[in-house]
Length: 170
Figure (tube, rainbow, N blue to C red):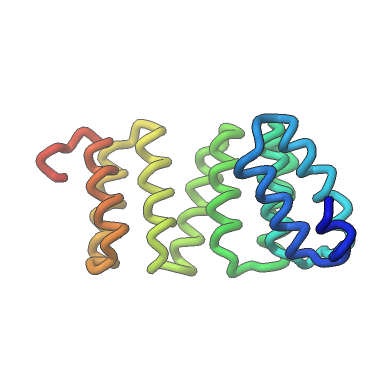
């Protein structure tokens, strides 16, 4: 690849190439190609947040949820205020079957960053998937009280309320 010859030591170029594989590649083989680029890059650039997020995503796509969770824990350890890492780790924990840990992660992220609508979406969605519709409605209402002017969140909240089968509340 031309970029490897011209800018072999640029972590942002490596990150862009990997993200193309993960976002637009097809299936497991694309994730494996991304992983082949990521493993040496993460060793060389251990503090590059984007490379670590991509590494977690590649592990997750390959069905290696435990490795994805470990990578996300490293992100959180190195960047404790990185909300995206907390949210992604919560999703991985949920897929691993540890819903309680996932909920604790999202609650902690919400305490640190209460105006982040993605946290409210993730919390409500997780509660809906686990069948806790009443709790999901309460979380949605709480998020709407905190973020009354966030149009994107309001739209998402309507869709989430519909998922709780509360047509009148939507």
